[in-house]
Amino acid sequence: MIETAQIISVAAVLASFLVGYKYGNRLSNNNAGKSSNSRESSDQPSSNEEEENVFSDGGHGDCKMILVVRNDLKMGKGKIAAQCGHAAVGAVENARKNPNLLRKWRNSGQAKIAVKVESEEKMME
Image (cartoon, rainbow, N blue to C red; front, side, top):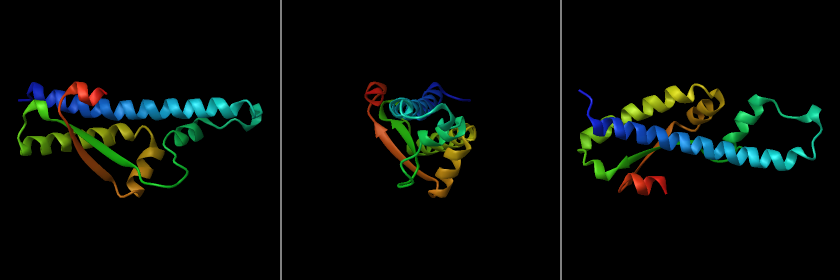
């Protein structure tokens, strides 16, 4: 049976992925707004190009999946590993909605980094 701690862990990982996506999207929109004044309407990027720019760092650097584990949930090492596996699979399934992001992550070696935080409050800072 799925425990509450497992559900919270998966939700926390997915929330961190979503927060990163929204933050990147906001930065991209701010940069696009600054440069759009100098562009003519025929030069506007397509929505596909805008999606690619959300995760663009000029072609340099890698794309990594960050898995956040909360220490206050008091899970054992095996349970943490299992939950990280579930979260990684879920994140990849969600990333399929953005093929450019998924391709960049795969071309970067499918890097995954696990970090720990003490509590949900620390994670949201």
